[in-house]
Length: 224
Image (cartoon, rainbow, N blue to C red; front, side, top):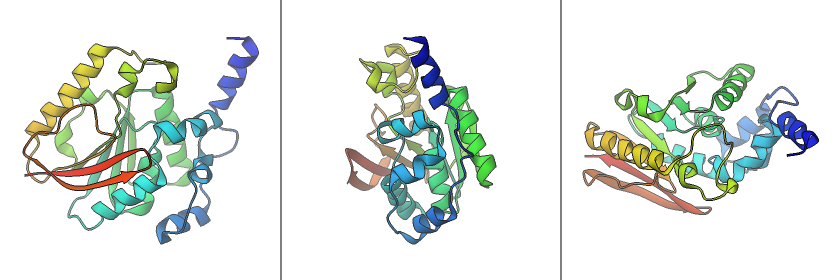
């Protein structure tokens, strides 16, 4: 890559302004008024704004999730593979849940936590972690937006950044671990997926909601 292109790419991955979310956007989100994803995404550096339509969960997805989970007697949700934290921010605005996110990429976690600090978001925790090290029992609701697809993407358009290891064996290992954790989960746990997670949901999970949103299915199960 040309040195100028590298410099421009590096610059586009940093904040050009403080990522303060306008109060008007928050009010619109909570009242159900239309908000464009491109408007919300201005809190991210330019490079990650461009990734949003493919790799981050949209406002429509977050609103549907919040509609499903608000009436539930649950307290915490974790986004497994949360990227720069977009869904975490949206669900914290739209619900009273304590929201957690894990992400392998250190720079994504730094971006997300800077946004948390600037906006004074409470009850959000985003940490750098591999899913294999997660204690799933600590959370009431699990959310996965096809987080392992990058491991088997056949071109760069399917990846966000090449700063983690990609391998078919990782895909198999991660999807197997999700199935294992779902099989061990206690009754009452909730799973929400968008575009699936790459594996099967055990038979003792009951599908309770499913909606076609944008280019995929958003589905919710409860462990029986």
